[in-house]
Image (cartoon, rainbow, N blue to C red; front, side, top):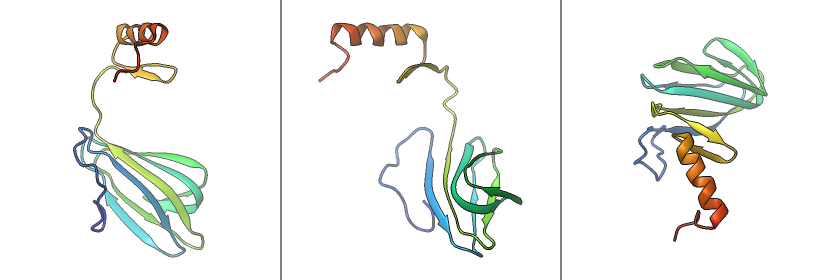
Length: 121
């Protein structure tokens, strides 16, 4: 929830925060990132000052756990995505479009894909 607006999905273990934000010239906005959460800002339009550092598009920023993020603009607007969430602390095995917890799970998924049983009804 930000400024009284909340999304419809609330029961996600990572307690994610996904915000698409746009600030006009000479505006300021702050957001606290909870302890233990990883936070990223993807600046894709304009220019802003993120926690004291001037950043132009196109850049990706990573913030420290528990940071109080302050974004302000000067003469130019900025648009960015702010994403944060708690890590699952589980192993991750990526393979193409699949992400599982083990190589065995990847192999099982590929076998199901080959024999036509991947999509379950």
